[in-house]
Picture (cartoon, rainbow, N blue to C red):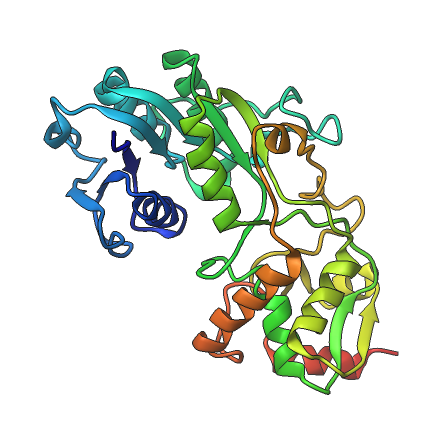
Length: 328
């Protein structure tokens, strides 16, 4: 019998990949979305609806699904979807984030303390993303004690809209035989390839996995991640290391955003994104492709966009070279 899956989303990056892989498995795929973030993959059915408006789920009345995948971080949307649809879905997956952890204990396991939740009726902003995710988890588990709560960390792969992971292979390729600015020390990275994450989400749903799972990548030293990017890109220039205080004095940020070194987390700055236990992810069937493979595929995608394009995260090449010129 063909498996049916409902994706609450399906046109943006993660939701679109869930739909694409589910279609490739021969499943009956329905995506409920506004349809403004992109188009659903060929073979999936789009139900156009704005979840901010009343009656958003009316078009699904009377339908049953083997599985549902929810990706929103707005508590109100999550709660309303559960009220309208939960009884018609056999297995429910909520895609949360490791951002929910308060980092009182490391490495964070699924039982580690979380942040305080925002009120479920609040329209959350980016500033309260982590607290909103906590609220969404709580609403999900209150309605479905058999739900799977997937907690990804940094997600990488072709199509990544954040510009974080792709900065390093793209910059190494653009630098060529020229110098590359890198921080002299950084916390480990733990990127998971979107394709591996989504394959596990679908497999875990089919296997009726429940409860929270840190769906994170393999822990890789920051220097090793940079070296992999250089190897894949064929970078033959020098690495120019800069200390945390030196970079801070020049207002070079960490982790993400403009004028930053993406994915870099200085020691003691804030909880490392690479400090999350992956045992349950692996025990429930999760897997990791080689980092080199993800890097190669991301670099090919970055080349298609243009290696010297303006980025949401990272330094421009001009700013990078200016900083390199200032190094002692």
